[in-house]
Length: 74
Length: 74
Image (cartoon, each protein chain N blue to C red):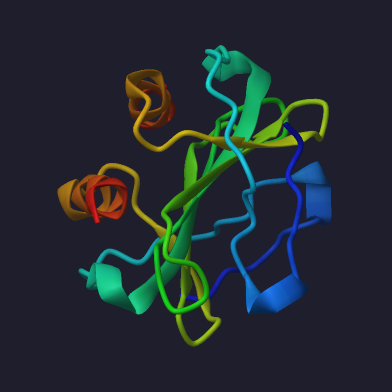
């Protein structure tokens, strides 16, 4: 599910849905963690893959947290 | 230490130095974790503050890891 920016009705969340299947850390170039805030009430985790594709990841999925930890540890 | 992009000598790391002083999570809009790779041999943690300023954070500083965890937990 590619990243789709939604402008209508002032909805400023970047993620419509999230990708739940595991992505190996070495396929990921960077991960952006957007805090919840006035713009969007959800925490949003957006991975940029090495091919340049951006995917929204599920912040509650255990593998997403492990992936973030793995990036720190590498 | 603001974020300075370095182009000379093919150095593609974004961070020249890192900000070590604690930044409260609520001052942070998002955090980007750049994996080490061919472009740059360091893991780079770049925080975008609510004012729009970008700061490189020290990946080894405990408070940085706690801040990332806090973003997930909020």
